[in-house]
Image (cartoon, rainbow, N blue to C red; front, side):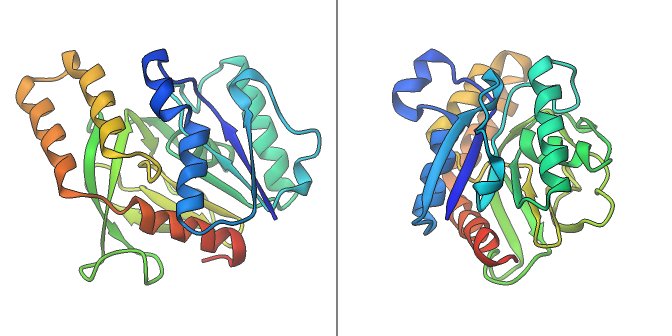
Length: 234
């Protein structure tokens, strides 16, 4: 059993020694969540795809600073790959940009978030199966996005939402599982992203988002959900 991670971004050079890549962070989450099969990471942003995508148990699409609905050649090529994978019945998981790109291919509306950037620790109502959220039915995850899925894809089941992001996670049967925030992020990396964009926001907003990180998050719980989905579905 092998997972293919399609890595869709390059980290800023100063962050590479510690966090390596989005693909590496995603692989680390899957390992920590109980995946004991093989994992391959391929740089989709650089046009690097396995020769045979059908050999994978699942394909995971990472985040990216690019627009999932944009016309960059590599993004267009990735959408074509995803359309083929969906048609072939391949199991797909998407995080942030990956969540948006899969939804776009499925015909949903994707664009700038009406409420602006989502950053820091955000709490979502969990509508999916038990064993993921807390006793109150809520899930806290780390977010960093200015785009989001605006309409639920046809045939999809809504799994998580909040007022800022009404389509925060969804599934399509046992084939597709996608999430807008980043279960693979840690607190320090999220803080670096907030600080890197701090000039765009009022100082008190930045301070509030940084302070939110101290409350902890449920990335590992969602990671276990991902592994369970890959092995058997929701």
